[in-house]
Amino acid sequence: QVQLVESGGGLVQAGGSLRLSCAVSGRTFGSYAMGWFRQAPGKEREFVAAISWSGTRTYSADSVKGRFTISRDNAKNTVYLQMNSLKPEDTAVYYCNAVSDAMVVDGMGLPLFDSWGQGTQVTVSS
Image 1: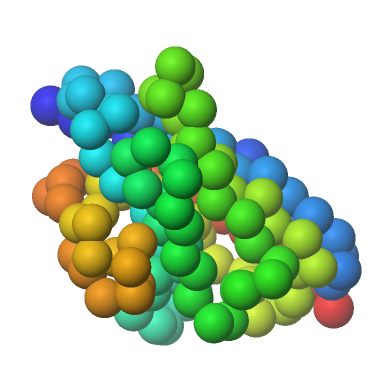
Image 2: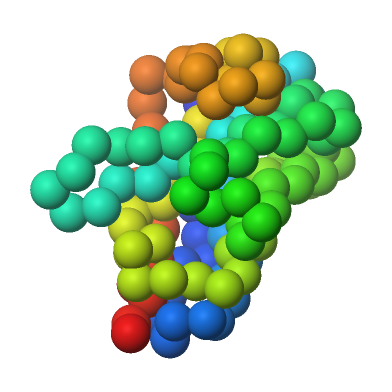
């Protein structure tokens, strides 16, 4: 049974920064591409960023490109999301999941694990 535990969220003013972490257990972390997703109130979950299993390739949604950076540490079974220049529209619950390789190419892949973590709340005030 895979476990995904997100952390690092909080309340921040517009223009500020946060670093999210996602610890993965129960699967061979280094075998999977990983991705971050977010869900704002009343909206569907959306893709944010993805990283290849080796960490050498990344892809980000246009809405966060140039502001958010995804990275991973395979020795720690952890994937990160560095969020800079935060905007009120970034307010959401953020989740991680393994993703298909296609998501790292053009953001059009699929999350792989049926079970999601509890997510971490990010609130950006104006």
